[in-house]
Length: 270
Image 1 (cartoon, rainbow, N blue to C red):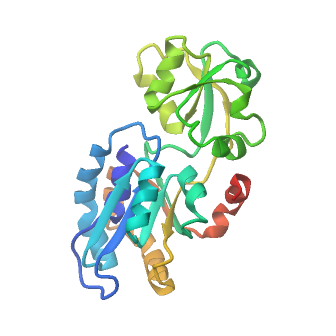
Image 2: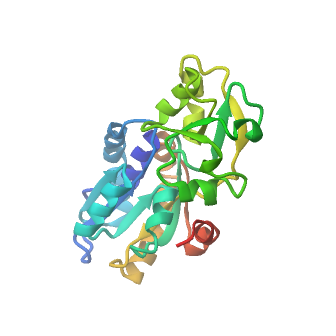
């Protein structure tokens, strides 16, 4: 998950000029269903730290990277972070309970989750997958799949579900014939070329493109602090740091608001 190295590097800094409130800026990054190990993140944290510190002037930041929604819930019960970056399903599930307010969008290479696909080596289309075995590691949030990903074209109940725990395990289930089709995201699809025996797999259906990972502020972050942080987002990848952003995999970094995610939030429901 090299792109998540970017996300932590984007926000995970430990040095800089003073900022009276708060003394320590806490960031939580929640990325579910990644295709690579979290160990990729730390080198990018270190590389980008000086630039982030220079732009924001924060004296200290504590970054916490989590891969499970349950871990995020436990973290939020005992910690009060100022900002967070969430994979889209986690954001939609937690946004109301924890009063998440969107301040930006981060698109990063190899992170995934901006589009979903049904892949198969034998089925020709969505109809050919319905009623058949479907491998996926995204079934932990059926509301997200049924209401957001599928866009009304199917539900998980339309298939014989083969649940998996790891992203690449999903693809291998189809390769070895334990599933006719698989539901994967764009990061998983990009891995097909690197998996032995997956050459015959191809997309037979794709979702509409979805919004990038939202960068959010928590209620304990004042409006003034939120605005200041939002104003500084574009500076992180300006001309002075463009090469660094490219190296760590930033595809786009822009300001955003709750309205940018309103259609997805409405589809997902309360």
